[in-house]
Amino acid sequence: MYIESKAFIDWIVKELKAKKLPNKDDEYICNCPFCDAKENHWDYTINTKKMIMNCWRGFDPRCESGHTIPTLITLYYDIPFKQAIDFIKKNFRGEDSLQRVKKRLKNIDERRILEITEEKVVWSMPYESESILDAQSKKAQKALRWLLDVRKIPLEVVEALEPRYLGSDTHKKWERYRNRIFFPVSSNGNKAWLAYSTRKKSTKKNPKTMNPPGHILACTFYLYDWYVTSDEPILLHEGLFDAVRFFMFGFNSLAGWGTTVSSEQIELLNALPAKEVVVCYDPDATKLKQDKKGKWTCRAYKVAENLRNYYFGDVSVMKLTRDDPDRTAFKEAKTAYENRMRFGDRFWRLRRLKENLR
Ligand SMILES: [Zn+2]
Image 1 (cartoon, rainbow, N blue to C red):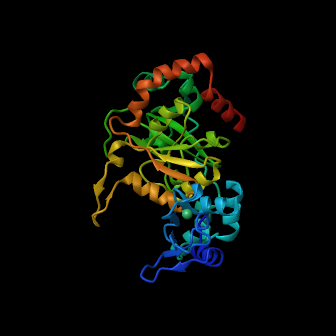
Image 2 (image 1 turned 30 degrees about the horizontal axis):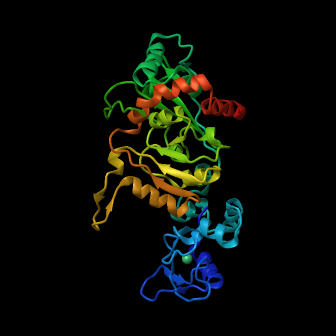
Image 3 (image 1 turned 180 degrees about the horizontal axis):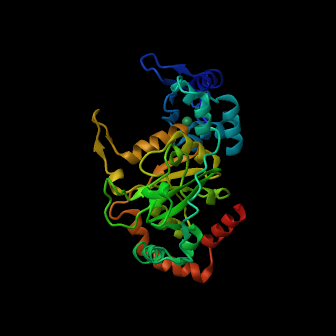
């Protein structure tokens, strides 16, 4: 879902009587619809490019902390969030991702584009792989021990993740993927996998993770299908094991395969009932550095900015200063996990949810 700025500008001009600032391309001002209906202070600014609004008076609780389009519509019409989204879809909807891709790739055969963006992409697991849980081969048993002892993932969680192992005695087409743990990845109909090597070092010839050829992982999140009914905030991680760690605590964790988000992934996020995304990257992605224009920023902020433009909920960045999420989580994992075993909680609820999906 993309918001067309022209439709939005038409609305603010008609509805809020906004006026364009003479020297700035994307900035409009108007009287704050919440705290300044009569006094004409012209203190409410609207950035139509970033699609964020701010009241510089903030005399009303509704305009204290600035607005995105969904929050503005929710408060302005005093309607539920979901209804506001419907309003935006109906009135401000821009061209969708398919149209944008088509425009960008004018010369490419249309059928190929449809395959990428509209039809669901499915990459099945190699049938020769064996389930890690009832591993027969020695190598697969070793891989299970690696998950339990080195990555410290409890057996119950391994069971829920359903990893498989691909040995060396397999068809030649799987040559590059041999001796790896396959983690199934499923997001709203797109199905793929990630083949993880248990070796310590990543080399050019033998990288740590391998995925199916093509665009597929950019259309998916790890653990996505598990949260289709939860409205709690989504934690967005870099890698699969970060997401699994926080998942063990009962968070709505997703892994987005690195420090970027694609437009397909943002559409997936918009399809979930959660209203907030917390970008939760490793410290090297949240450490501020000066860019070419002299602005202090980091990769996590860039992702957050991208999300703020197209994601309909709130976006924040979680800064982890000392440890990477993996270790922070691990420190408390034992107690949390023991409590979980004692009281039974959201982890089991999520697992049941997953079973319902099948
Ligand atoms: Zn105000």
